[in-house]
Image (cartoon, helix red, strand yellow):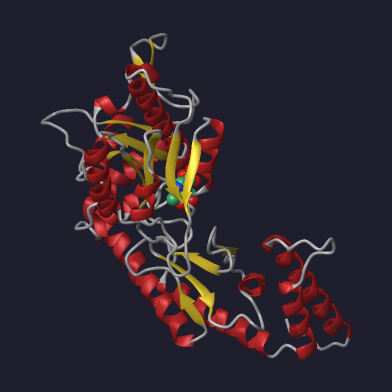
Length: 402
Ligand SMILES: Cc1ncc(COP(=O)(O)O)c(C=O)c1O
């Protein structure tokens, strides 16, 4: 079943497979394990090449955007690869392909592009990256490859944006990961990594065991694991098929539109997610002088919503966003209710007594007791405390507002 899933996903990603040829890939615990394996394959291939050329092979690096998910930092630290991050900038929250290619050197094992940034759902321009890298490889004689982290986008783009070239249609894309437990529509604990060809996964990383009765090739970080997620993925792929996934993703896209337009109508937010991308809405306050995104997040909890607020990575740390990910079960009714609840929260915050808003603003901007700049977590905690004190005071005077 695992191999059948690998084949279906490889076809979905346009792997160049001959008639009857089996795809190369494996089921993992999630995209994180998939990325560790893909990264290891790149590192080993690069080391083999450098050794064959008699060159030093002890300082591998990988080029990514500063917006990468933490699993890339884990890969870099656990497997001793330098992470070279392209910094973000105001209004541009994904990796700039031009800057990424400038950072590539002879020790770069691969450039990792993201199809669906964790922070704002935006698809990075893999085609542009591929074209620039083809040029650079031609000039230098190197053969720097690309990995696509399609944790979310891998089960979205093939269904609703089939015209976007991001996958094995591009010659330098050698491996792709996708999370089955995100838009693959399976419960938590499944991811996939697919390689373009046999040659892209060094044979020495594959172990063969036969003590279970037949030759079993294994390339995973652990060995035994439950089969339920693989069965669930197989079931979803077979039961829904291309049309089923397409309908669900179109529905998510439509509910995303409803939420985005509802937020735009309030005229209080800048939308920092893009229309083309993962079905999510990331948004920040146009004016955060009176209250900030952490306060909105905190207040929304009282209505049963957990909407995270977070700051962008370097060099866009001054931008704070709230993010809502639209999955299959997030209906239009829920989208409308969320907009209504956000409006209630805004109204409450707007009508807070001036002394409380002043205290909140000072908390959000002030320095910590030891003179250091407060971390977003510290700010969030202190804002919550100010708010709790205020509610307690109100309760004492029987003037309860929540
Ligand atoms: C772009 C990206 N890559 C990798 C991951 C890690 O995925 P997983 O949770 O499946 O290990 C995530 C998870 O949020 C992600 O958004």
